[in-house]
Amino acid sequence: MSVLSVKDLHVSVETEQGTKQILNGVDLEIKQGEIHAIMGPNGSGKSTLAYTIAGHPKYHVEGGSITLDGAEVLDMSIDERARAGLFLAMQYPVEIPGVKVADFLRTAKTALAGEAPALRPWIKEVNESMKALRMDKTFSDRNVNEGFSGGEKKRHEILQLELLKPRFAILDETDSGLDVDALKIVSEGVNRAQEATGLGLLLITHYTRILRYIKPDFVHVFVDGRVAEEGGPELADRLENEGYDRFLTDTSVA
Ligand code: ADP
Ligand code: MG
Ligand code: MG
Image 1 (cartoon, rainbow, N blue to C red):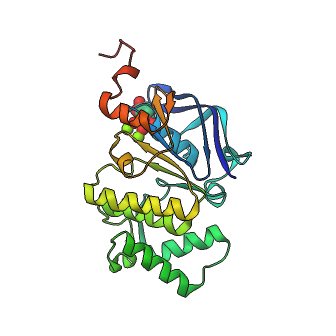
Image 2: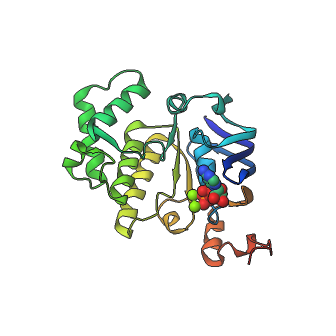
C-alpha cells in the first residue's frame, strides 16, 4: 500500500522584507485510500504545504522530507511527481491559449501512462465523467481555463482527477466560491474518484462545509505552520461549532 509521508517539514519564502518562515515542522502520513482534511485559519500555511508538495519554486525547503513509498519527492521534478502518482489541483490552473480541454486531457493521460489511451474507450470515459460532473459537451472544445468561471475551473480539476487516476491528490480549497449545487456535484466527483481508485486524499479547507459531502477519516488542525491537533471526523464538527479561537492563544494577536 502506498504512503505519502511528510516529516518535520520546514519551508520559507523570500519576501521583500526578507526570509519568511512559513512551515515549522509539519508531520503528516497519508495512506492510499484515506481521506485527510487539513483545516486551519487563513495564513496558517495550508497552501504553502500544497505548493511545496507540488514543487512550486517559490517555496524553499529548509529541512525535513516528503516521501512517496520511501522515494524523496523533493528530489523529483514537477513532471516526475505527477508520474509518481501525485495530483495537485493547483498544478494546472493556468490558461493555456489554443489548447482545447479534450487535447489537454489526452496529452496529460499519455504523459502519465507512457502511451496514448485507445481512442474510443477514452472518449467514452471522458464523456461519462463530463456528464457525471454536469458539464456541457461543448466544454471539451474550449481552451483550458480560458474564461472558465470559478465553478468550471473546479469541475475541470475534478474531471482531471477522475481521468488521470492518481494515487494521491491534494485539493486546496476546492470548496471556495462554489454554490451548494456545484459543491455537491464536485464532491460527488471526488467521492467517485476516491472509491473507484482507492485514492489517498489531502483535502485542504478553511470551512467545514465540504466535509458534509466528503467524509474525512482524519482531521488535522493547522496553526502557525504546523499540525496543532489531530483527530477523527468529530474534530471537524467541533471546529464547526467553536471555530479556531481556542488554537489562537497567542494574545499578541488581537
Ligand atoms: P493559508 O493557505 O493557510 O491561508 P498560506 O500558505 O497561503 O496560508 O500563507 C501562509 C503565510 O505565508 C501567510 O502569512 C502568507 O502571507 C505567507 N506567504 C505565503 N506565500 C507567500 C509568498 N509567495 N510570498 C510571501 N508570503 C507568502
Ligand atoms: Mg489563505
Ligand atoms: Mg490557502
